[in-house]
Length: 294
Image 1 (spheres, rainbow, N blue to C red):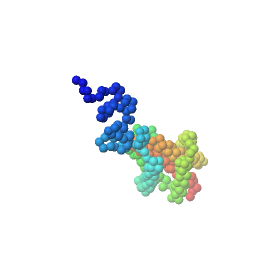
Image 2 (image 1 turned 30 degrees about the vertical axis):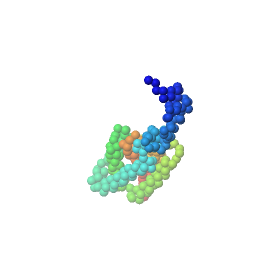
Image 3 (image 1 turned 120 degrees about the horizontal axis):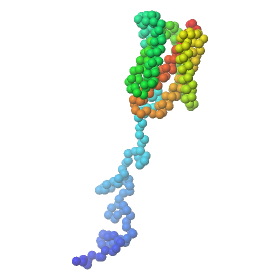
C-alpha cells in the first residue's frame, strides 16, 4: 500500500532529516557530517569516538624515521683501548713479578746454571704459545685466548728472571725508561696519523722474519757486530709495529664485532700484539745498553 503522506524519493540524492533531500554532488565533506564533526588525523580525541589509527604518539617518531638499531658490543674506541691496555699492563706486571720471584729462587738459579739449553727451551715455548694463539684464534673461546695469553706472559717472566740476574739495575732502568719513550711516541703516532700504515706493515713483517733468522744464525756465529745490527734493526722494526698495531686496532674496532665474545677475544689479541711490541723493544734496548759495560 502506497503511503501518500511521504514525499517520493528523488533519484541520485541523499535523504536529509525532516524529509528534505540534498541534491546529488552536494554532500557534506567527509568528516564534517551534520550530526558530528570528526577531528583531523592525529588531532585530539572527541568523547565517544575512537582516535583514528596512528593519530596518537608513535614510537620512534613519524613513519620511516625509527631509531637506528643499537649495534652489538657497541663500546667506544676509548673504552676498547682502555680494555686493551688493562690486559697489556696486567701482563707486563705478571711478567715482572714472575721474573723477580724466580730471580730470588735458588732452585731456578741452579737449573739455569746446570742447563745451558734452558734459554733455547724458553724461546721455543714462547714461540709455540704465540703461534698457537695466532693460528687458533678464531676457533678458541675467549677464556682460552686469555689463559694462553697469561701463560705467555708468565713464560716471558722466566726470561726476565735471567735479565735480572745478568744486568745491573741501572741498565734495566735505562732500558725500561727508553722503551716507554719510544713506545709512547710511536703509539701516539699510530693513533693520530691520517696516513695508512698498511703497506708499512708488510715491510715490517718481512723485517721481523729476517730478525728471527738472523738471531738463530747468530746463536751459533756469536758475532758481536751482527748482534749490534740485530738489536738496532729490532728496535726499529718493533717501533714501527707499535704504530702499525695501534692503527690496525682502530680499524678493527671501527669494523664492529658480531657479539661480546668476539670483542673480548679481539681485546686480548690486541693486548698481546702491543705487549709483544713493548717487551721486544725493551729486550733489544737492554742488549744495546748492556754493551756499554755500565
